[in-house]
Length: 248
Image 1: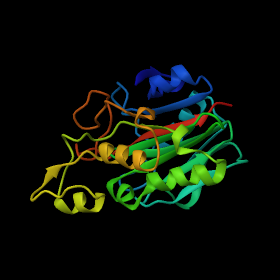
Image 2: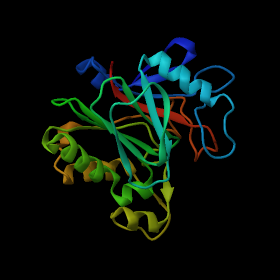
Image 3: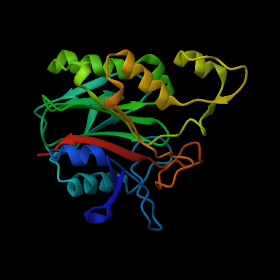
């Protein structure tokens, strides 16, 4: 990923390969920044960041989109399709852990701090989806659900779908109990062991028909990496925002 600083001091990384191939697309994730006041975008939970609402507006303006959509995330599999929206920062009614659109000017957003931001792109029809992948949602099938939704809404063939698994806690850092391995459908160890959730997602994408060469994985870990990212496992309450959209 490539690090950038936009206007209003908005710090973010972009998905370099997609930026080079698709100038009409914006895919990336915010990060803490380098100043004494971390660029926290957390809107829900305790404690909330009093500056978060203004920072969401700064993010939208800095990235030059008309609308940014987000939702209260509950580690489930509801994905909302967005079209003909207004302008500004817009919260989805109810909860959701994914968003999809083929409209330009709509920036999809999920908040993360160890969970996997899952970016889906059908370049032929210019449709995108962005999913929040915690282990509960991954086990419940949010990625296959997202792939199916793209097929239903825009006739996306998984064989032409591009999948990017963004910055998240890595397979060396994410130690979990056997029940998590069981829920994810992978070999169950006898004791707490690290699990690679991005590896599980890559396998799910392949099982859904996405070619392995169309699946990319960020090298950034939220816990042990140097991308200046917030980590829940690292004791941080703040959140960064992953975003994906077709430029206006």
